[in-house]
Image (cartoon, rainbow, N blue to C red; front, side, top):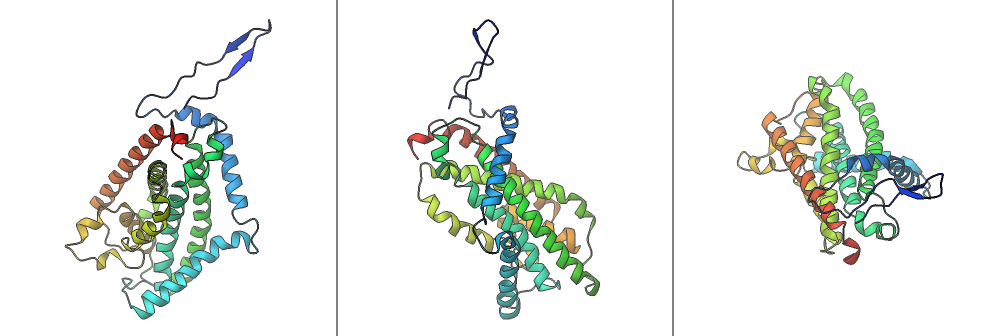
Length: 292
């Protein structure tokens, strides 16, 4: 893909090019300065997606609150009352709400970002701009939704806290910004990775939702990490979201089975997936219009 050419006209009427633009050739040919230059476009995408997502609905942005609340109530009834799955002595509603808030952001960002090429092919084929601007805007939009749901969680946390001695925030709460950064990087990296693969393997569009649902049950969202058998625990350490969900609970509840080495493995896998996704994205974007 060749970047958009810019030019200016001198006082004498002659044209001078501000920059020489050539096709991308490297494996990791990502121009972050260019992405920053198009930051207004990114924010325009953010505004478009955030405002229009529920624009023609009756409840509008209230769906940001209704969805996690309804899911949490269902989980509390099915997994807490019927299946009687342990929540490590934590209030079941708050336990499931914590898992839903964290997982909801990751799942929404991954699903939306994985459709970057196919959903925006009509734009990509007409004008040049950094293609990473679209998935970046998607991650930011879902992060804004996450902040709304985080405020909802904190509200219920304050409601349950006086009557529950086990709810004591830990010093890990200071690392919350780092945890949020990891969630954003992981969903962004995996999203652009799947988006790149979708241009060639169209079946991934149909199985993405199913894969995300399976991944949720392979993540301690409806059960604590302490309930995982020791022989299965090494496999759970390969799931980066397992450490993310448990770390979030540890920050607010003060107790969790997550270990520091599991967090380290989670970060390592996150960075590897981010690198693989960006590299593949930069290679595919050169000729994806021929395959989409």
